[in-house]
Image 1 (cartoon, rainbow, N blue to C red):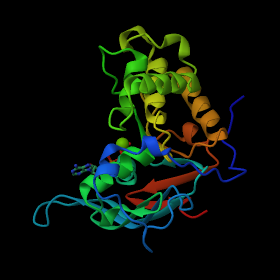
Image 2 (cartoon, rainbow, N blue to C red):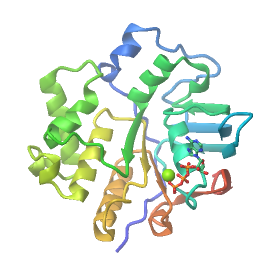
Image 3 (cartoon, protein in one colour):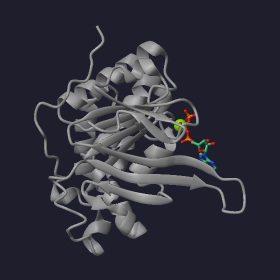
Length: 269
Ligand SMILES: Nc1ncnc2c1ncn2[C@@H]1O[C@H](COP(=O)(O)OP(=O)(O)OP(=O)(O)O)[C@@H](O)[C@H]1O
Ligand SMILES: [Mg+2]
C-alpha cells in the first residue's frame, strides 16, 4: 500500500552540530541574528515572499518564470510541488535552495534573509541548511558510494575518518550499508539515487530539496525512493519534492501547485 507522508506531529528542531558548521562560516563573518534574520532554530525551514524571477534582458525577450510566489515551509513538513513543464518548478527549487537569486522578493532560509547577504555568506548557509537531490544523480564515477557521500562533508572542516563514519551512517539511513564500497556503475539507478540522498543528508540539513528525484527511474524503483522520503519525513526531516507527476504528488500531505510561474493552490497552510 502506498504510504502517504503524515503531517508532522511535533516540531523537530534541527540544529547543525557546531562541528558541521562550514569553515567559511567560522572564518568569515557569520551573519549575526537581527530582526530580519530571527533565531534560526525557531524560524520556518524556508520562506519566500513575493518572489519573482524574470529571465532575459530588459531589451530582449523576457520570461517571467516566477511571478509573486509567497510560501512557507515549516520544519517537519513534507511538501510536493507540482506543475506542468515550464511552470517554474526548477526555477523555484533553485531560488529556494539559494542556487539562484530572485529578480525581486525575499527568501529566508532557516530565518536568514539570504536576499540581503553576500554570495559567500549565502554559500555558507546553503552548505549548512540545505540538501539537494536531482533527477541526475551527480555521483563521481570513480568513487565508491561511501566516498561519494563523505564528499558531501568536504567543506565542513571534518577529518577524513569522521567523514567516513558519518557517510556510513547516512548510507545506513537510506538502506545501503551493504553497498558502501560499490562504485556508481556497480549500483542500480535506484541505489544511485539513494547514495545521492545520503550525500544530501550527511550534513544534517534543515531541508531536503528534490527536483524530479524519480524522473530517471522506473515506476517501481521510483516508489521505493518515495517510500524512503516518507520514512525520512517520519523521522523528522523537512522535505520539498518537485515533480510534474501527479501520482508522486499524491504521496504528500501538502501539495503546492504552480501554473505559469504563479502558485495556483497550496501556497498557504
Ligand atoms: N536560464 C533561463 N533563461 C531563460 N529562460 C529560462 C531559463 N531557465 C528557465 N527558463 C524559462 O523559465 C520557465 C520556467 O522554467 P523551469 O525550468 O523552472 O520549468 P519547470 O517547471 O522546471 O519545467 P520542467 O517540468 O520541464 O522541468 C520556462 O518557460 C523556461 O523556458
Ligand atoms: Mg524542471
